[in-house]
Length: 126
Image (cartoon, rainbow, N blue to C red; front, side):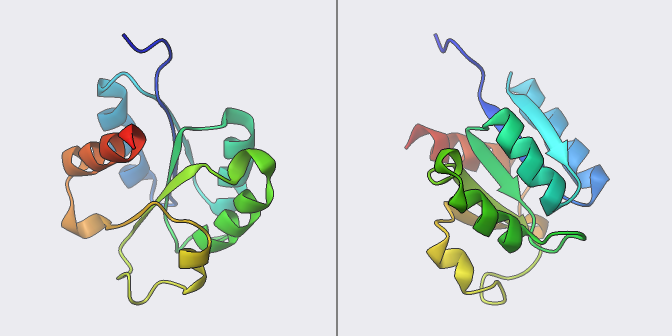
């Protein structure tokens, strides 16, 4: 069927959460890499060229919206699908996210990894 596995980057400073998503996505046969902050996430994305990025907002070193701003400046990163995965409500999120082409906004505490995986599959199918 599909020749190459889906490549997912999870950029999340809570390692337990990042690992949880890695395990869930790997059970689907996806290639998953994690980064603990936006700076490392940007480096990871540049190296990996993921199909989709799950991005936390509140992180040390470089926040998610700062990382996304930098990502969008790269020709390869202009169209990369990005799902914001945070515990911040959408109303509290920086207004700049709308201009940066966020694919979807998910509040972590309200979704199971299975539900998040289903949403990722839905976005990738578009």
